[in-house]
Image (tube, rainbow, N blue to C red; front, side, top):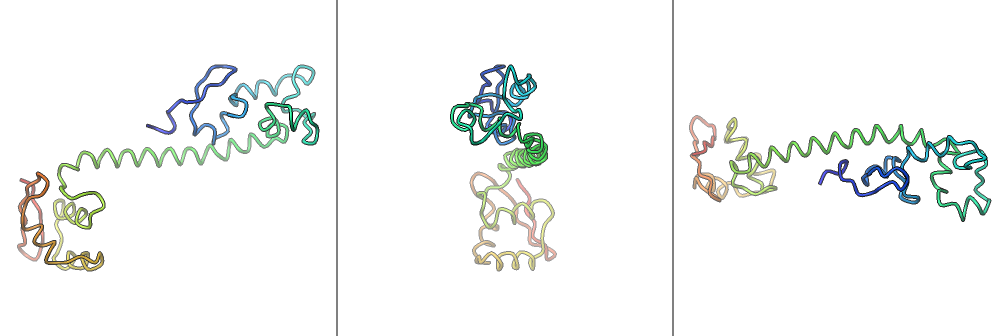
Length: 184
């Protein structure tokens, strides 16, 4: 499910669909089930037609604080904070959506390479296997990594020398001081 694309909320005025991330971006107000565009249009009407977002807003008046269904967005419009909030959240939303897209691309890459690495995600040896498969590594680097992770050198060397796990077979080469894995 993509957070920015999932449409769960419907504006009662125009019928457009919005996602939960649009609520955080001040593009949809669930309190009154209305979108920013419709509220902006409502605020543009003269005060004889609609008091929404005008200078008539009074936090202490019962009409505004208790009975008005649009009291939260009306306050934002009346104080002029809505434009600032939307501009501020636009940059944050763009950065968040960029991060989500990058993560989804990495995950898609993981799914493609998962068949080439028999070790589970989060395992100590998964990154070792990938590095030895792609570029190889020295025995000193191998020992240092295992030491830092608190693993047993002999156990992991035995695991690599075995040459198979979870349906993946490989050849383990320890020549010239380098450790390399070649998939079969």
